[in-house]
Length: 520
Image 1 (cartoon, rainbow, N blue to C red):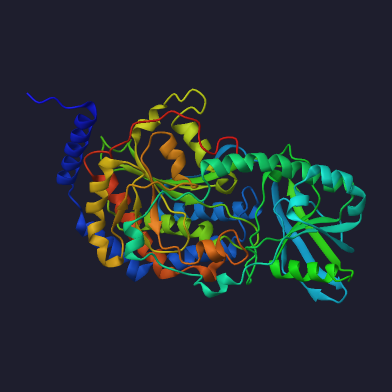
Image 2 (cartoon, rainbow, N blue to C red):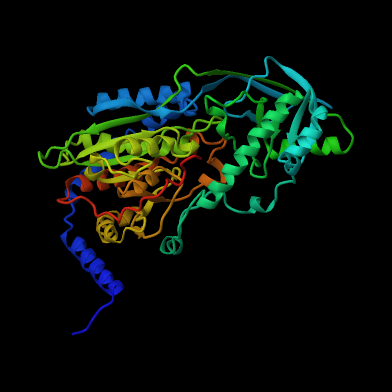
């Protein structure tokens, strides 16, 4: 008798499991065709997109804009016929903030507009403030000892932090792209922020807080930053811990285009005094510090399987400089359209389908992580809650406006042949890749952490990372409506198939460990 090592036995078991899953898949191609025909002939995506972006405005977590979008989503899904539609609190977030008025211009050596935006949760200027600009290098701006020793220099001044000029090489690269077949065949783990970067930022945030304190105490008029990415019309505007109820009011904050920052820098270095005029008026309150997710359901129709869940979602919150169209109204638009399709077509899923639109994603997946802790697993003891065993899968969309080209299997070997079969009817739509690689930095990680199969779809990048991500250009006109329609067809089909197959999707072994963004 031949003896096998444990590793060999495990490999053979996985192979047998994989073969079994592949053989037992029966795809409801008739339902897939109904979904495709309905979306191509009567899509509601343009209307959903308009209301989540143009009508709601910027959707900074806990802001009036977020509440406008969340309220509209709840009421709309109720009208469609979904049940249990509501805004569900997940815990304390912090301050509510929205811009009421903003202006900035250069006043000397001549009058000219500049391209700049207020930082999220910025303090107000208490009226129009005019003053001289003083330069800081990025290194000095992070050196708290330097700032403390030069505090007198900042009083009554605009502190502008700017480094070297942006490279012109990027002008010769396409700003929008699609994934080539070779790229799809060689997808690697993709993390916008990996574990080491998260730890690095935690250290930086402490320094940022001290810098804010020093600049405020010095009497600086405002803290203005530029960056090498803020060029060619794109200005990336984001923030950090100023939203917490315990966070002290800081100096007013502004993010400026690289070109305007470089112009001001050149003028000052050549001996010319530069003056700016700035007004920031924002409505900042702590009336309701709780954060809210949007949830709604299509009830299952099978008496035995109805208590089980298939979940789908994306994050509804955005940054402030635009209306958050590609990050991530796009994902929410697709997920809302997917449940609308399933409900309107009367396809009667056996399991209950639950959509969730998250808040606080931009601050470290707060909405989905706290949801996972509330429903699925204790964040301290890692004890599982009963609902955890009832979720077959969670599907997420949060990488811009591009078509779905495949899915990240998150190292779930047993699910790969299942998804490969499910993608076959969509090969003509350009979607068929199932990669074992992981992707991170968005809400499926909260489910993966809790031991639930959580998946993010692979999408064409378009201009997500080069132009729209967290920027002033992230608006409706950077959505590709036909790509979103393609995505809605695939998401609705995957969710329906998950909700009707005899068994729940296979799971990876649960690894009990601290959540990657916990404490971020």
